[in-house]
Length: 313
Image (cartoon, rainbow, N blue to C red; front, side, top):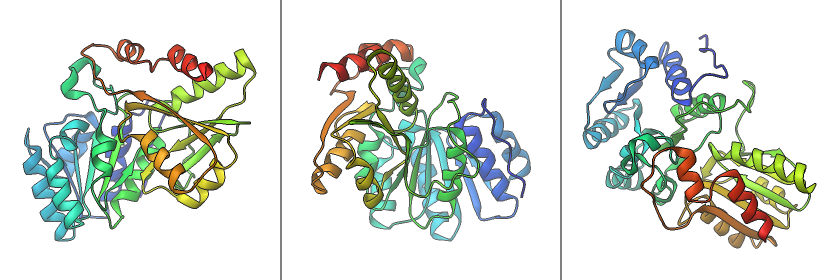
């Protein structure tokens, strides 16, 4: 099997779709369902994988029901749509199919945070971590670049547990190498002295901007940890990393209630780590604005606001 090349201009969704297409060349059990979603990368599925691909239309409830049934029969099933429509809209189905029956189907949601800011609040995705992590047995994968997205898709394909893979809509800079294993669930992108920024997905890149600015303006050396497996967390290795820092700063384009910051707060408490935690995210509000930069600035997630919050404490 020759894997489709991933470049600096490859979107996460295309990396995911192409990796599954490559795998399906020899694995006829891979099934791909979409809910009225378009992507150029899907053209090959429509023409060359007709028996392994279906667009069910705007019918997410039907899509997950079909997928769960086929997964119970041994198929490696993926459902794909804009993230709110395969998380919030069909949460009860996840609760019953994944939580109760532990059916190993895979959910792909494209559009983390405000990826679809041009489409308004119906397409905002700021609560998916919260509602998906409370589904028993559900793994949550959150890549920060397209190479990682493809690798985690392949991992999910052959996992025996239900998974949710949350993808950024825009093209992000590549941080990974094709040879990376992504087995630990997180990676330490940079070591710091006393403080560490912990983020996931697209906001890992904002964390890198914050680190560079703090180094440049204040001489502070802040660490960065990219958590790409939000559930379950690799506890032993992560404990070793976090013990090095007096202060942890979580950074997310997500509601604070139940998001990455909450995951870390629980982790720090449960493991009795001697560190403080500052959570930066969306504090119990949504806005009706257009343009991701405008929304982030309003909610204090732009670079300047984040720097101000960190240096105030």
